[in-house]
Image 1 (cartoon, helix red, strand yellow):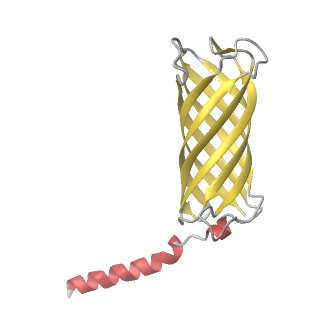
Image 2: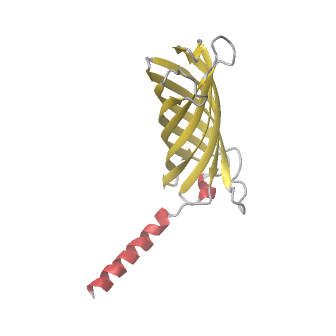
Length: 199
């Protein structure tokens, strides 16, 4: 009798909670929605060219992205069912190793969200940035540098309008041959953040 009572109680609680746990991707990602995101990351240089000497950079970064969903969700009957996000992100990157330095600038970000998995929303992204820096290393030594990245990750919606996300980015920094040296460098970056959706 006690087991049946516990099972019935649990079933009623789950039934009551289900509407609150339901997630309508079409509503959250509808056209015209504004997204405000705050994020932070940690990165480290890797030697993809197998050079004898690199600077072994390590850094952290912080950014705030202001985005909009310009279209209704795409491809409802296809595996790529998702939503396109376009945004601008002021980004600050602080280098801690081998010495203190910074890069700061503005990024244009394109992110595509895959919507078929409910509250779990994978994404892919690309970004291009331009900004100022005081890096003085063999790979780059200039007051101006481009920063580009591509990445992937996933958001988890803790409510209909709030998501936590975690991702990986492959990043490249160089000055576009505006000065010498300009070998540039690549980095792995792990990023985490929170996004708020405003219809």
